[in-house]
Each structure stands twice: as C-alpha cells, then as structure tokens.
Length: 172
Length: 383
Ligand SMILES: [Zn+2]
Image 1 (cartoon, helix red, strand yellow):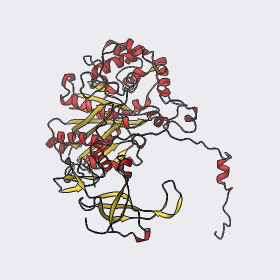
Image 2 (cartoon, protein in one colour):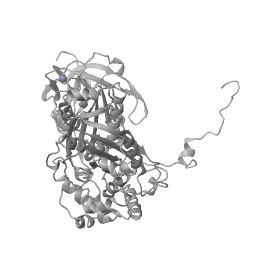
Image 3 (cartoon, rainbow over the protein chains, first blue to last red):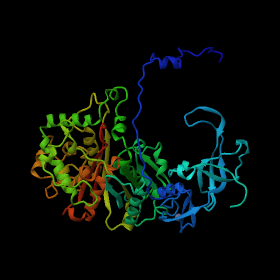
Image 4 (tube, rainbow over the protein chains, first blue to last red):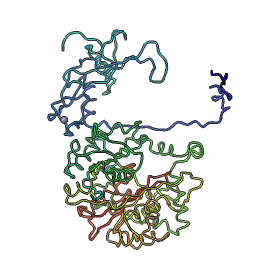
C-alpha cells in the first residue's frame, strides 16, 4: 500500500456481523405517504394520456408550446390556458444507457432513458421516457421515435400509459 | 443611503383544509401573481433574488428547492430554500437587502398538508432516532408535556388555554381567508377529546393548505414603488438545545432570545408600551400564553389572566391573533410565520377589512416550528 503501511489498521467488519446485530445500530422505516394533487395543467395532461393524446400548452407571449403542459410560463410569468394536442412522435434529444436499476441492481441489458422532443412542441420541449424495440447500441441522438401505448382499457392517466418510444421512420 | 427594508407586496392563496383543484405549483403561482401585482413589480425583470421555505419530508420530494423557480418567476435567478419557518425566510430576505447587493427580494412559503397522508409519521421522524423514537409515541406528547409543566409552574389553567381557542376561532369569523372560524365556549373546548393530556384535540390547530408570497424592498425602491410600505424594525431567531431530556419545559427560551435580538435592533425596551398588537404561534393554545410571556408582553403566569379579562381580544388593549391565528387559519406547516406576518402587514396598511384595528403603528409576528422543536423567530414591523 505504501512504504510505511502494509495493511489497513483496525478491525474490519463484515456485512454479516452488522446483520447479526454484533454492531449496535438502530433501524427504522419512515411512514411517509403522499398523495399529490395534480392540479389543472398536469391533470389535463394525465387525462389526455388516458385518452391516448399528448397535450402541450401554448404561451401566446413567448409563442412557445411546452410539454408537459403547465399553467405558468416560466419565462414571461404569464398564465397559459391553451392546451394543444400534439403528435405522439418526436426525436431523441438525449439518452443514456443505464446499467443500474431503480432498486440498485446491476443489469446486463441497460435501461434506456431518453428525452423525446415531441412533434408540435417548441424545440427543446419533450417528454422524459424510455426507448424500446431497439438495440441499445443502435440508439442515436436525433433519431425519430413514436410512442407505444398501453391498450385503451389498461390506461389509467399516468406517464406509464405510454410504454416506451420506438424507432419510427417516415415523417409525421 | 438608508438601510431600511420594507415589505411592499403581499399575496396569498388559501387557506383551506384541502385544495384538490390546484397542484402546489399552481397554489404558489396564485399567491405570487397577487404579491407581484400588489408590489407593482415584474418578477422576471425586477426581482433580484428569491427565498423559499420548505421541508423535503412535508413535500415528499428530496431537494425540494429545485421545484420552486418556475412558479415564482425565479428561473435562472438567484434563489434558495431554507428548511425553516416563514419568518426565517423573511429574515433572510431582510438580510439579503441589508447587504446592499439586492434591492428587491421575494419570499415564499406554502403548505400542501392535505397531500401528506402521514403527517404524524413524518413528525415522528423529527424525534431523536436512537433515544426517543424507539419509545413509539405520537409526537404530540411533547406538546402535552410542555403544556403540563407550563401550567404547573405558571399557575395558568386549562380554562385559560381554552379561552385562547374561543378568542382565536371567533376572530377567524372576521377573516375570509380563515377556514376554522367558530363561535365556541370554554366548555365546548374542554369537553373535546384529549390529544395528549392536558392538551386536547380542540386546543390543537388543524392543518390547512395555502401559499404566501411577500416582496421586500430597499428603502430607495420602497419609496418609489409603494404608498404603504411596512418597515421591518427588527428580526430575531433562536434555537434551544433539542434534547427532550434536558430542555426547560415551562419556558420557551428560544422565543425569549429571538425577541431580545429583534428588540435590540428595533431599540425597543418596553415591548408592551411600544408594540400595539401581535400575532403569535398558537399551534397549541397554551403556546400563545407561553409565547406572550416570553416575548416580554406579560409576566410569567400573567398571560392566562389577561386573556380571561379580554385584554388580548380584538377590542382589548393588546389584540393577539386578530387573524384567527393557527387555530383559526390552520396550521400551515412551514408557512405559519408568513401567515402571522401577513396579518401584521394587512393591519399596518389599514386593509384588514372588518377586523381592522384602529390606531396601530407597531406589530410583532412570532412563530414556532412546532413539536418537537425548540425553534422560534420574531419580526417587528411598523407603518
Ligand atoms: Zn411566456
């Protein structure tokens, strides 16, 4: 390790020793339950997803359509109240290949998070979702994709009503 | 250049037990629009820095401050969130302007308590995880123990605490923004179910939703923008040691120290003579009595007596919680201090409607962060 230190000083602990209670510690789990009101804009968005439609909102001052929709334009601070149905196609703005799961397991086939700039929305406005029906190595920035939806009876008004976006040739 | 600081804009949304029609962002936006319009400023152009108060566990979002800029007009501007009470936020904005670096600063606080389904579970997580939480007791027990020792030492009575509820919920009837107005008797309060004896359920403020935004300005800006600036004369805050094992259960020394700090800045030596009215924490009814004594308005053990005599009534010599307080407006979590300050501003402007007090020049807002904290803040304002 170095000229002066050949081994780590001290006594090392194994996970087993901690698990077996040989090291004093206190364990607990917080009862934290939340139910977030979706409000006007996100409520409209989720209701749209249930119907298989992606809604954006339009700011007349900035002449900009944002998705997901909101009641407030963060640039001019004016209210937004025009909801516009958008296409369910778009292009990949950026993506990553994620080799660790939500619950922190290593995986061989990566998750494919991506931001998809939705056709009909102003540039740089898109949906945070996943890609599917594509080899991870084939994914490219700028690639055209289309939403793959759950069947109408399975949709419940959630971002997961879209299963993923898949490669899509052809113009919208 | 003078270094006085004024509140020149106020806006709020609420207050109601539930607000299913709005997301917390939309609730904040409504309050912010009103505050900016009231101040005559455009947040995108004019406001130079933003301060919000929030607690991640109340919101259910880690690093919650990241979710606040859009609905305040704060995108790509200096902003930060404090995990403290609204009065800590106001004090921070006050200091930002005092630095001379900023002349217009906005402060925001809100409560979406209705979206937190396990408030007692979250509050339990404010207990010490090793020493206290394994005993598995609802954190209201801290209020019960504090009340018990306070009554024991001060000679104040449960009837006097109940009188606070009667007064504040009656005051709330004159406040269109207060959802818990009611005509009750001391008997009504005392016959309610116990929460953590001697503390009763009816002496405990119910949670409510709402948002409050205020705009603060340097003297130079305030004189240009506002015809009714409310000047900040002093701000103070203080925390006692957190231990339940060794705190002073009868006195709120944090409030005493916070007040001392604010009085020193304001040059106030005789609070009762100088200050005309106050809004103080009444999350639990006894807290109003205890706080009034710690703030130096009354001797230890006197607040209950003067409350019975009607001195703190809206028509009395020293009105307290004319807004309805937390008991009348609701427990707004981190926004409680802003709700107290809001009433001070409305009264000092002369725009408090049917509950307007006459002949007032100086008001004091006080807040406590609730159990199990020993954390308080004070702000003194004048017109
Ligand atoms: Zn805009």
